[in-house]
Image 1 (cartoon, one colour):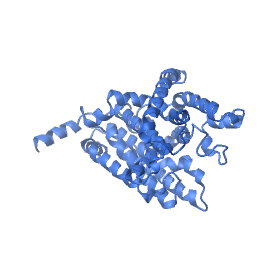
Image 2: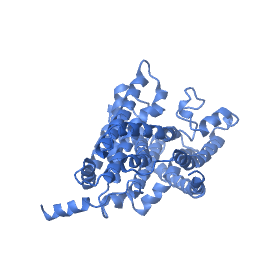
Image 3: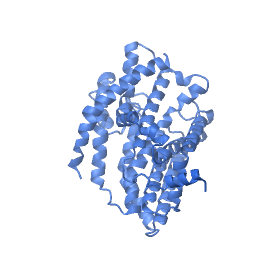
Image 4: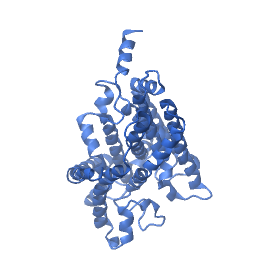
Length: 405
């Protein structure tokens, strides 16, 4: 074995990230995804994403950031369940888990809902049913809404948060079902891990079956924003959680999980290259017309598959980064990315409000204006609102975590 090969083998044998510890690199992925959504929405509103050419096509598929968020949630939230089953860690307490999710998500979200309704939907302030629907994140299930598009003005992006919250609620049940299926294979860690991955494979197929249901016997576009369509993205992240727990549950360096970790750590660029290529293919007509919904069953299926590849391949190097001061860590875990990751939820929440406030201030019409000239001030506004929300809403709300243990 060469000296370089020996050094590489020594590095990859170092202890991998803890299965239940904090991974700074994932904060960086969260930051990337949140700003990708912002760029996508500004490009859409300015009309840049509708222009002919490859640049416009790339901007038009920035919504791939949503599957990245979903996969990240699957990884982070299922990780303790997978560790409990494979490593024998303490079981997850459902009440505490749900309380922490509510404290994390709802206060800042409610603030944005109230703000957007007061500014742009004053005619519906006395509508108690609309308030109940929005505050409980059930807007996806209103098939004949009074608003146009995915939500009231300033809240259109919240459809994905509605899907997230559905996953939060269902996760304990999904985890229990997967655990029962895995335990049926005995106490062997390998068998349990493989059965978990098989169960997640079944969960992933739900998205493709749901796509068929969306189109047959007739097209029902509202089903595209219901949780089953996004099951494949959550399943991809949950599969990474299983691999991470499997690495720590089995010390054998020749186990499948540890071989996978070594391969992922040794070639992060390859994973990101595959993600970039899948994104480029998704920007082609194979996934349908830009912004006008999904053209047909085949474009919908291609979009699901390609977006899953992008999300998974982006996350793998961040989940299993090379040891030491690697390029992956320098890119994703530096202080700037850590800060942006912390405020990323606020960036997601406030971006449409910032877009419409800026367009109103400058008196621009939709689908007009310079993309970069709009992106800079809108980004500054969004960052300011997100930072204030993190400081005065999100952080204080998290202090309530101790109420339910």
